[in-house]
Length: 175
Image 1 (tube, rainbow, N blue to C red):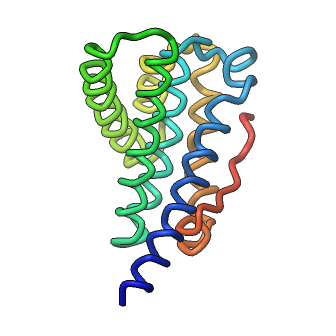
Image 2 (image 1 turned 180 degrees about the vertical axis):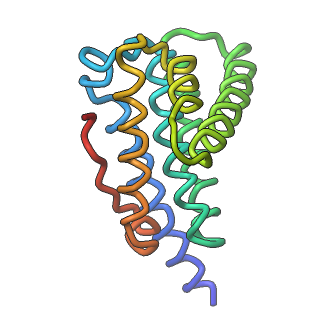
């Protein structure tokens, strides 16, 4: 029995690492920042990572208990990375914990905002406002990013649960 648990743990770690790296790689694509209009700083990168992670977690919630567990593990890995990044840019040890807590609260607020906006049918006004507010987009970019978010959501829906639970994801390009 312990061997099976060890194997599942190793398999999950691999999926966590793959999804974490995939979200980070996607969030750091230059076209979001140079052509896309997202602020090219720590805050902007946090916002892009939060957006993509929220979309991924939204999809993983539909994959049952395994998807929810994987979401939590990927969330933990992302925030371990944020912790490391804050330390790398010189944030003092005494303030890192407070900043990570605030970032966690910000993430949950944004994820809720995106969930509510995506739950609505038809117009993407609410989604556009959330993207503009969180990503700092110019009005000229908000429609494009709203289309991108809808494209990501439909792309993730086409992935099978098995693909996502193994850490396999293919992201669409920014239109």
